[in-house]
Length: 146
Image (tube, rainbow, N blue to C red):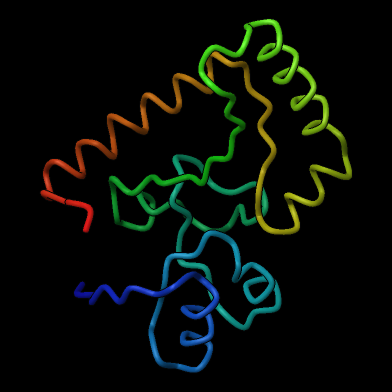
C-alpha cells in the first residue's frame, strides 16, 4: 500500500476533501463519526488496542493488517508543579465523579469518546508509556521541530 502524507490544518478540512473525493482516506479523531453512522463514509479501522464500544464491528488497525498502530486520544488535567497532593487528589476524585455521570458520558459518546476515570498513578503510567513510545518514534525518524 502506498500513501502520500498531506498535512492539513485540522481534521475538518481533511474531512471536507475526503467527502469531495479529493483524498481517499484520512486519520480522524472523531469528526467523521456522524458520517460513519449515516453511511456516507466507511470507517476502516480504529487506532486503539481494542475495538471501539461505539463501532464494535470495525476492526483495530492490527486486526485490519496494519500492526503497531495504536494512538488513542488522551485528555487530562494538569496542575502546576508543587500543587499540594491533597488538592490533586481531590481534583482527581471530583473529575472522576463528573466523568461517571450519564449526561457527561453521553456527550463524549456523541463524538466517539469514552470516559475512563483513572487514578493519578494510572494517568502517570499512561503518560510515561506514551512518552517512551512517541519518544522512540521521534528518535528513530529523526523528527525535529521547525
